[in-house]
Image (cartoon, rainbow, N blue to C red; front, top):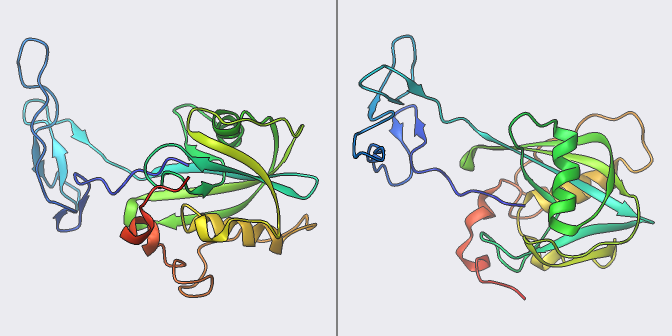
Length: 223
């Protein structure tokens, strides 16, 4: 799962977050300034946006949608050891950012192929997690592998089918990994259920509020 860090250009109610640095205006091949270049609150808006001082175009920097799956083969779950930052060497579920003009179910299938060369059948949506600190919405689907044939894709160093008693719980890459795994097991065998959401802080360990995404202690590569 490719998780972007918080965007330092993302404005909040009182202005840009993180470092607060203002971006330099892009330049064309001829050296001319192009695109949005001024932070201001557009008319009718309540938030500071990046606006083009020439034409008035407003650049809206909106949350990203991440889509993944808990894909199983004979009661074993597919997981991938990350080859890319952040969280290199840690285990995650196959997931990533949606592409333009893509259905969420298709994104889940694509990510499983890209990260684990796994062909999956995507079933129902079972979890939706809000991660406002990094401006993400994460969707997880139940899925089954069409065969146990898997191998690492370019974003993984290792892929594996884990039994439920073999999960690498001390090496999960992101808080939403154990959330999705536990929620998947809660609805095992059910056909009618409420879509799961963020667990209450502390209910699934210290990372249940999402604050462990950038834990310095856990940023060391694993392998």
